[in-house]
Length: 220
Image 1 (cartoon, rainbow, N blue to C red):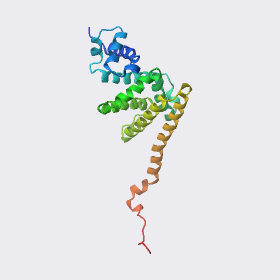
Image 2 (image 1 turned 180 degrees about the vertical axis):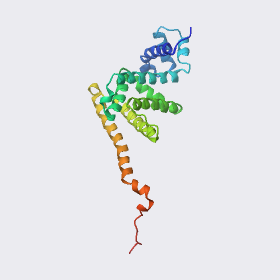
Image 3 (image 1 turned 60 degrees about the horizontal axis):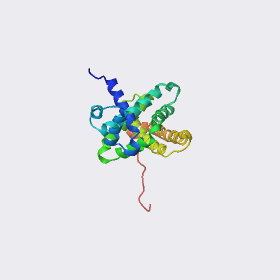
Image 4 (image 1 turned 120 degrees about the vertical axis):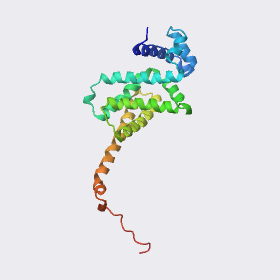
């Protein structure tokens, strides 16, 4: 009987969640994966069946699992009642809340993704996450703004994760304040750029509308 995508995802989730208990001690390693498979009550062949590429595949699924949990939380919110700032913040916060029980695993995964040969994977996973957040926030841009918004949010998300990992405030209150400040800063940049563009647009339309100031010779 052919396994459906849903069954495959369920199996991978089951192994992942069992493996997460071992990651704080063994890191993102084959040993942790093997123990996770055993804890899930599955045969060793299931590790290869569920994660053909081994640990990198497992790490990618961890990010996908967190993204799915994040989207499920966002779907339960009234996003239409929030401004863009609030929607983006809700996305980042929902993902970190989903990861809350697994902080040490997140710390370990950052070390794993920081390895030079894992840089393409780190970039790909981050792009998928920030794109999902912007899409949930209602962004449907297809021009250069698409890349600008995602690049800025990737920076904000990365800084917020690092802050969150070391935040011992109650209910991560300090992290959410930090997140709000960073998003406010980022959302100010496009508005500032738009104001400058509008202010100088007539110069672009009329090349004769602006001339560089005349500068006299030194001493005159």
